[in-house]
Image (cartoon, rainbow over all chains, first blue to last red; front, side):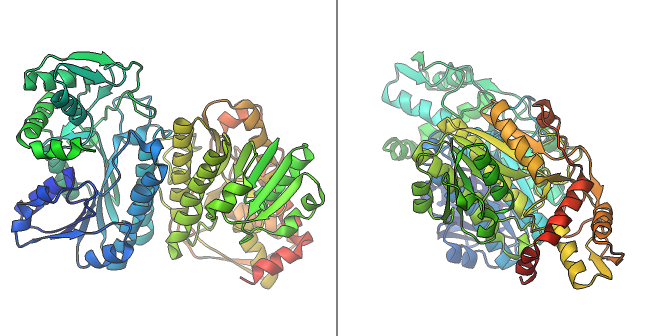
Length: 320
Length: 320
């Protein structure tokens, strides 16, 4: 199959590209390289079935032209900066809401009918039902990021209804693993590189977070594409467990052999719009026959090991 | 209070303007006059506390400048063409999703903290719970229009959380009454003006629809602004009843003294994306002490009488 991956040089995107190539597909990665790393694609670039196109999803002409003759789109390109959303509210609107619309229009122009989309568990806001199922009570949005992903979901569903497309919308927890370079674990790792003796933690450390290992995430998506046959398939993607931020820190410092003094900024939220608890009910995905191979603590350790083996990522990101 | 009404020359907007002026407020109507009618504001324009500004919500500079020194915004400007959404998918994105974002940005630039927003009962898609409450199961969107309104809701809630604003989001059923000039009843009225002896009906005529009289709608919004005190107040706005399209036709033809032969296109939907049943649970609004004064059949008749008394509206719209 000819598969088009927006954000294909990113963390999840590049891992997916490798897997799709392994499975014998032809793959085009489309990425503006604003956060994606061509180095993530160094193996892929050696393969004849692969092409990397440097382009922005907001460049309608380039996007539409590049997508010609593909059969399936994974739309992963997005602004993933949740925490500082209020510093640049236009970014979520443009890169996520309008960007997703551009992808849908490019699909329509090219007659591409199948779309997989990376949404987020944070669309549930601060849910009353935990673990939270896909049909939880209609939520109220608490971050610009989640609002822009919800806008994307809505557009996709409406395009499916209006233009006969089929979609798989995945509401992710935070993903960990190889090529992870943004978020929680990375921030702690970075701090400990700079000052191994102390660690500053936003919030009270009891925020509950759920994580999923990137290879488990990819297994789930590929399985869902085969097994879930509705017009619009909405699937939570996480583990049945959660950890507190403190537990996650325990794994990181243990893996690094450190014992830093921890200081807490306090409060139940790490920042305005942070959800104190993202814990998804993933029964729907499990009913398709999927189960994660790594638990959260294993995923955290796997991630730390990868960061240690790839200091260039830390050096690159540490600068910003 | 100084109140800013986007879409203030439209059907609901202009009725609201009149009411706000009656209640002693200073009012600015901001409207690009694409569907709004200055004639709806002929009484308002005689009053010193009123200003009409011809401008587009996508014109950020003009919008921001015009909104200075207001304390409350009613954001009613929108593309309201639900049925033909798939003919021009960019319109919902631009005028509704991006337009709402521009209004939020203008509010932020001016320090305006309070927003009332006209959303729609069609954000519930095809709900499993009927009558549908505000916290119904997380819906799947079925029209570009509803998806764009949902995107607007999400942005508003995120701005409330991120920038300390307060919002009242009203999920309307279809509104009827004075200055109604778009939708169901209008289409039937127009047909019967052209050929009183026959009436073509989309769908099977059994689509259930709920309507609300525009003055009841305005009563409800103004009451909610006084009584509902959450950061984000989401309120269904409709009647506890519904009628079938056929019932609505009964009232129209009876009011006009006609007996047209009815032909049906068939199917449970009038068009792709049409919801076969929008019937909202309005208990939350009623608990604030509100009740509609007219029932649906009375609203339909009131609307037909107004259309008869204002042939200029029919002549204007009949051309397009």
